[in-house]
Amino acid sequence: MERIVIGLSGGVDSSVAAYLLKQQGYEVVGVYMINWKDTIGTLSGDCPYEDDLLVAELVARKLGIEFHSVDLSDQYRDRVVEYMFSEYEKGRTPNPDVLCNREIKFDVFLKAAELFGAQRVATGHYVRSQALNDGSGLYRLMAGVDPNKDQSYFLCQLTQKQLSRSLFPIGEIEKPEVRRIATELGLATAQKKDSQGICFVGRVDLPVFLQQKLARKQGKVVEIPSDLKAYHRMMPDVFEDRLRKLAKPYFYRLKEGKVVGEHNGAHFYTVGQRKGLGIGGHSEPLFVLATDVQENIIYVGQGDQHPGLYRSALKIENSEVHWVRPDMCLEVGGSLRAQVRIRYRQPLQDAVLHQLEDGLYVLFDRPQQSITSGQFAVWYLEDEVIGSGAIA
Image (cartoon, rainbow, N blue to C red; front, side, top):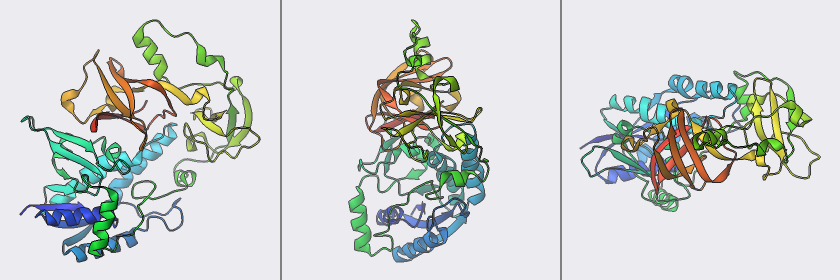
């Protein structure tokens, strides 16, 4: 009988995943990951790991499976939280949940599972994976069947080795069925709310959280008019040069707008952000168009149709490109029509990937709102994740 370690989080999804594994004949070992202990910046009552640990243990007892906990908080801080601080300091907006899966749940935790005699791990993610039947030894990573809960975006950086050693028991069922199974079994997690916020940290007051490392620094908020001529500059004739131009984040100068307020640090804001500006007196809401962390200036525009919110292309540096399916990797000069999303829950967008010498470019059929440096672009063929990369 194969031993499988499952990450029991104290939530309903991992609880039911553990039950399903046991029903399938595996020797299941529940392990709770202690990844975050600090409370700086966390909103009241959020992410009390001691409570989740207790609930996870109750579930393990109810299911009659072995249970342990492992403290991975040092690795989590080094690999995920420090990365967050570094990215925000550069004026980029990271996605810590993607990093948490790549660096912790399917790397550090996978190594920890070996200490409990298991070679594979399972989680309560709403995704599916399966081996290709062509003898290549490659695995496919696919969206979960529940479109409202699909989490394939967050697993977009997994490698073939990680996929080969991972199981996702609830990827084939929908959330209401998960709740039903947990209720029928009388599990303590049956009616527990889904976790929100940063993976293992919970919901946070982001500026307060970031102030552990990034100092407050007062600067100007500058409003950019929607008819700024910069948006209509002549495009180059050569396709590759035109693509590079379209993919560049918008850059503004102080003289191109008017000062409408102040802020406490450009690195606390992100493109597309609406809340937290605290500036009134406008007929439409203000949105962040760009941040300049060097000059400590935030550029904003009125309304969600401001042209500064929309771009037709993005770039991913070659060093940041990750192919979940390495057999589909593009050579320089190659292209691939795919569906792409640039944030979790965004409907898939039609686009063409172009591999140039200096990076991978994504050209969308329609302009996209709030393309944000540091976030992950993920490309799919139908329901399969083919690759991903951090946006330049």
